[in-house]
Structures are given as C-alpha cells and as structure tokens.
Image 1 (tube, rainbow, N blue to C red):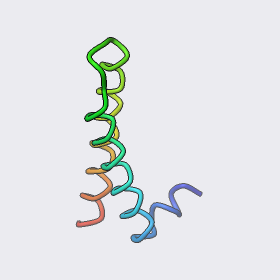
Image 2: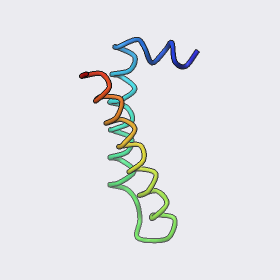
Image 3: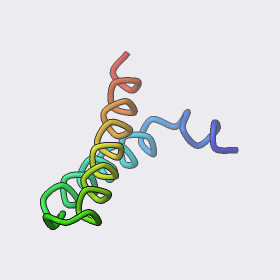
Length: 59
C-alpha cells in the first residue's frame, strides 16, 4: 500500500516538501541539551528522507 502511494508523483512531492520543512524546523528549534541533540539528529534524518524522495522524483 505504501509503495502504491509513493508511486504517485504529486503525493511524493508533497511528502518530500513536508519532510524537508519539518526537518528544518527541528534543526532550528533544537535546544542545546541532550534532548536537543536527539531533535537535531531526527531533523537531519527527515531532511535526508525528504531530499531522497525529491531526488527519486527528478530521475
């Protein structure tokens, strides 16, 4: 089911943009504590996932 949803270009683009924006917000709002380090890592992972989806869309 998820594979079918990701085959739709418009949905994949929307999801990629959402992941990139959410990752950017997490990177920006992460406090300088251990919990902030976790948020920073999560933000980086979301950014990578969003960029990977956008890259898949352009090929």
